[in-house]
View 1: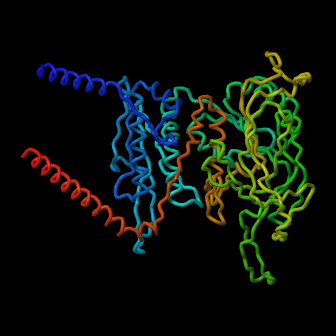
View 2 (view 1 turned 120 degrees about the horizontal axis):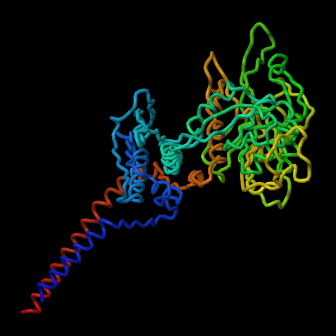
View 3 (view 1 turned 90 degrees about the vertical axis):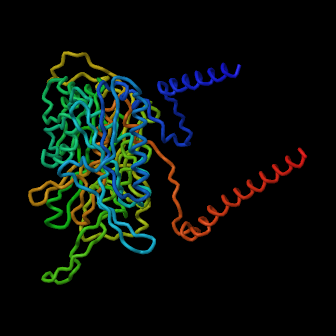
Length: 542
């Protein structure tokens, strides 16, 4: 009987080993589901038909925060491997700083120890993902100006799944989608959107051109970008854009509500500001939004150097708050702007949602701070007038950019098509479910040049600060073209539990003492108890 029991136990152990080897069961017991992959991620991983190799370059002597980021990265990659299982494809990884490509820039971390000393560490917060001979760089570290190191590391961990899936999308796509920058209405030229074009070229083929008279000229494009136009749209142009939208097209509108002159402002110190009529107000109103012909001012703004000297021969340049250059807040409720730094703008207008219960989902993406002001036009902007009364800045969170999603009504639903349009398709009165983004500040998409070199989009030369313009614009286009929902991975949020360093240092000796003495006392208690029990048993046997 004992032999059969032993055989049964051995058989049960062997079967359990086989089941565990072939069937991996994982439970995520965390409240924020930080170890659970999104369905879109699992679907993408299950479509892989070749091995994926990942080199995690974040290695070396790391502090506790970056060790946490490294561990989260390894766990993410292992979770990817668990989803794939033992299929034809597999994911292998190694943690090593030996695979660093030539030219990759490191990140230098400056820290102050508890003894007051300064420590400097050089790290490479990247991973290299290789699939079918192609390699993509995955940025592991998100660095948002104004946040603490712990918060930035937490945001980086939240961003890991999106970062790896973004790289996988780039490596697995078989067809490069096309997007277009519109021309013909005084839009920004190629040099003025060069930095954004370079960033988007990682994902898309980018074309530029005018509309013409063919109604289906935009059908091949996943999205259309209208970058700060200055001239009115014709009825033919509006019809082409409208019908493109009706067929499920996506449009990024970056349009100002006012006209002004930077050249006149720089030469004379003032400029008139008048409403900018682009002949699209009826169109945008039909789609549920209005760009108001007004300027927003904000106490949270960029500074501008101003000569405050009374003697023109001895200038005294001092930074003064330029309220017409607001630093726009980003919404944490949208994957487009979550964890994106403030977006810089100049001469921005404001938007207003219209249409009431029209079935459209409208989300504010960018807004002013809690100390804002609206200046109606016509008006005059004067560089010498900087400090108005704070009581005038009584508005809060004025919308400057928004996304609108749903089924849109056509502007031409009850109108005849323009006579010059060449079309072989019937007029559509309602759209397929689709998306649009409206930004009422043309400056948010324009990059500057310095000494023949392009500056990063959102970089302010005077303060030498990089703002979130590029991330915002890239995310906006990615969101418009996303049909699978992978952009929603940017909304992943973990609860950050921070340690009070001062209390930890003060209670260090007590904690160490307790952690040493209590186990010894427990061990002593167990020993004494066992001796007492044995002595009692021996006495009873006697």
